[in-house]
Image (cartoon, rainbow, N blue to C red; front, side):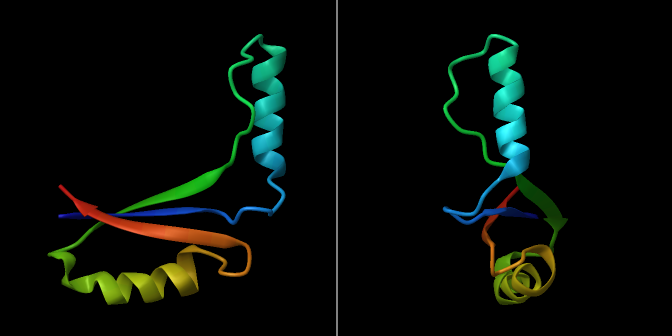
Length: 77
């Protein structure tokens, strides 16, 4: 089973990488996007979903900076 951890900047936190990508897209003629936010994605192979509490601790202490980032965890195949 795979656990997927998504980490992104909290709303209101400046995202210069996202803004750079948005500017590049617009310069290339792609005008459909109004904002781009960068994030991180972790795929972790686990035995089952009983490790959710441990993954929460890992995400809070190691994968995300809780001051400026938020995360979500999903389980699937």
